[in-house]
Structure formats: C-alpha cells, structure tokens
Amino acid sequence: VISMSWKNITLTQEETIAIVTLNRPKVLNALNTETLNELYKVFTQLDGDTGIRVIIITGSGKAFIAGADISEMNTYTPDEARAFSQLGHKTMDAIQNTGKPVIAAVNGFTLGGGLELALACDIIIASENAVLGLPEVNLGLIQGFGGTQRLPRLVGKARAKELIFTGEALKAPRAYEIGLVNKVVPQEDLLPEVEKMAQVISRKGPVALTLAKSGIDSGYDLPLSDGCNKEIVAFVESFSSQDREEGIKAFLEKRKPVFTGK
Ligand code: HXC
Image 1: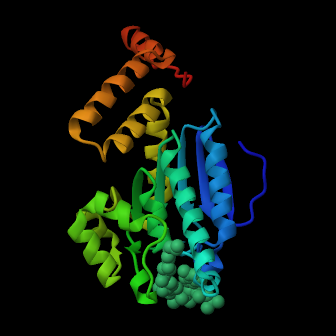
Image 2 (image 1 turned 120 degrees about the horizontal axis):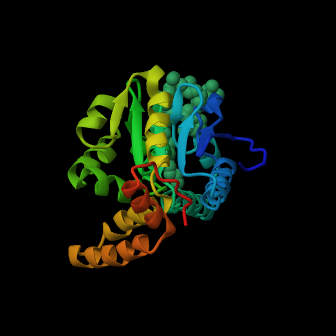
Image 3 (image 1 turned 180 degrees about the vertical axis):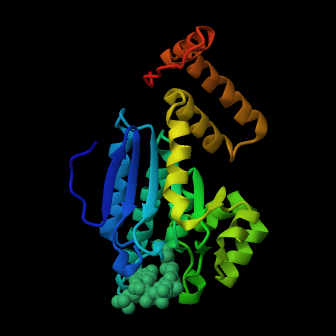
C-alpha cells in the first residue's frame, strides 16, 4: 500500500482491505488539525489505489474518537474556527466520496467530531461498550463536521434533535435500535467481524460498488424520479464494465468471478 509515515494514524493492509487506525490514545484520538490533514491525505491516496477494495477505520485504545481536539479549539479566533470546520468538512467529504466502501469500527467513545466522522462512513459497526453522541452543546458549541446534516438524514429529524439538544450519548444497543449503527458485536469480536464483512464486500465487483455507493449518496437528496433516472445512467455504466462481462460470464461458467475494477 502507501509508503508514508503518519504521526497520528496508522495504515495497514490485509489483502485488498485497508485499515486506518486513529492513534492518539492519550487524548482518546481527539481530532486536531494535524490528524484531519493526515486523514484527508490517506483517504485521497486510498481512493486512487486500485489494490484497495474496502477501507476500515477504527481507533486505538478505549475510544474510537472523543471528538474534535478541545485544547486546540480553546484558543481559536472565529477565522481559525471557520478554517477548522472547513478542514473537517473537506476531510469528511473525502471519506464519504471515496469510491470504495468505508466501514467505521467504533470501539468506545464515539463523540462529537468522532461521531460525525463515523456518519461520513458507509456502515458503522459498534462494539458492545461503544458510546455514541454529540455533546457539543455542553461546550456551548454546535457540530462543525457535518453532524447537524448527516445525523437527521440517518435517524430522522426528531431523534437527531433529541441527541443534539440533550448532548446525551447512547449506548451501542440503543444506537442500533434507532438505526444509527448497523450492528453491535462483543468488544473482542469487533475487528474480526468488521474484517469479515469487508472481505465479503471486497469480493464484489468494484465498479458496481462505486456506482452503488455514489447512486445511494447522490440520489438521497433528490426527488425519487431524479434519483431513479440517475440509477438508469449508472446501471448502463455498470453494464458497460469489464467487471460485468466477467461477473456474468463467471456465473454462466459456474465459477467465481475475478474482478479487475474496470
Ligand atoms: C481533547 C480530550 C478530548 C477531546 C478527551 N480528551 N477528549 N482532549 N479533546 N475531545 C483528553 C482528556 O482531556 C484527558 O487528557 C484524556 O483525553 C483522557 O480523557 P479523560 O477525560 O481522562 O477520560 P474519561 O474520564 O474516561 O472520560 C472520557 C470522556 C471525556 C467522557 C470521553 O474525556 C470527555 O467528555 N471528553 C470530551 C468529549 C467531547 O465533549 N467531545 C466533543 C468535542 S467538540 P489528560 O491530559 O487530562 O489525561 C467537537 C466539535 C466538532 O467534537 C466540530 C468542530 C468544528
């Protein structure tokens, strides 16, 4: 994969799966400017890496991410606050817009900017001990990395308002009940379970996965008929791919497909 040394994250690869791990456990992986810059770079690079089919993001230690770095924000001027929010949005957009499926493996505190980052991922799997919330109002702040926009789209307006107004965090089983996370698994099974799902996805046609992801995300805010028209265009694009040729041929020949992502 990418030969580059990172300060606040680690990047490992298992076959075609990349694992990005937030690695500032002393501050519960709080997101500072340097970490956001590294995340932006790593996701941009992974996006262009044809050897990678699925990306997992997780945290080291007892937290996924406890939020934006409060110590760094403490001295911000309004202009610096704007730049920080813009950098956060740019980073979350890079995560959401990569053509590869991204799974967040949330393993403990998933708060503020940390939950906002998870919301930019395609799928969230939580360990039983995970705690998810947007506590910004406790600090007199609102969300700055997309939480006021992505959370209501995922769980509905009323539930998003309750979470944001009270600042109260949800335990993983309740987060599952309201559709905030896809699945809850025992803590020790978190990475193995997420890797299992990533492996299943990694064997599917990459062109189809990219088109399905962008179809869902770009169609979500459109009127149904516009979204359906986009689907027709994307369907034809998948149909015109070498992956589709190989996928259908392999089915008819009763063998496993070998997709190239073309
Ligand atoms: C900076 C943080 C941090 C954060 C924890 N730490 N969260 N540092 N920014 N968001 C640091 C602590 O200061 C402490 O450092 C160390 O990590 C361990 O944390 P503790 O508090 O000792 O751990 P614990 O008692 O287990 O409590 C865990 C916790 C608590 C409940 C998660 O740390 C907490 O409430 N953190 C803040 C959560 C939060 O408000 N997040 C939203 C931030 S605003 P020391 O040096 O004392 O050991 C946000 C806005 C995003 O995210 C948008 C911006 C544009």
